[in-house]
Image (cartoon, rainbow, N blue to C red; front, side):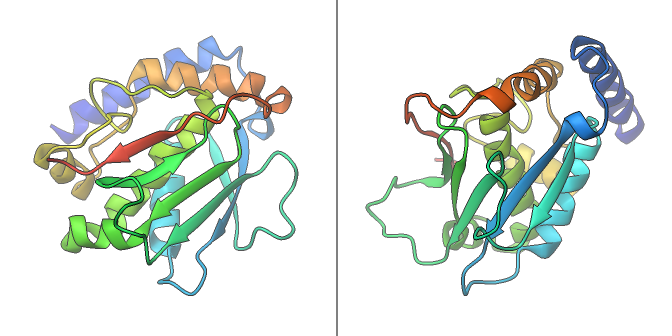
Length: 196
């Protein structure tokens, strides 16, 4: 099962690579500034999120603070005391048309799946970063970009099997081409929610 899933991911990445015109590694590098505040360290999840993107040829260059981030960087804040009335059921949100900001509700992630915090946080980071790279408020029927993950998806996260669909990879690559010229659209919100 794992080998078959890996072959599918490689084929999808190859197809998407062709779709982006064979951009160089530098052109597929994204700077992400992560402000964890006084909350728990997100390092293990960052490493896993990096591997998820590396699997499709995209490099995430992490920085630990938002003060000195470059203009084209993605800014992520981790919330450890999310007000209950703020987007109930959501694990995070991004502003895909604005192209810069993501807020991750770390406390809700820890409550949602206490035994899977590392992989769940990594996949939430990958999901929300993808919203900004694609510059779209859309979700997929399967994989990392689903709008609501199931128990099967959580199990796939745990074993490193939850991946991007071929369509999402193509949209990420097209978004990377347009990204240097982005950052001025509507403030619509994209979010991942916990299961019902």
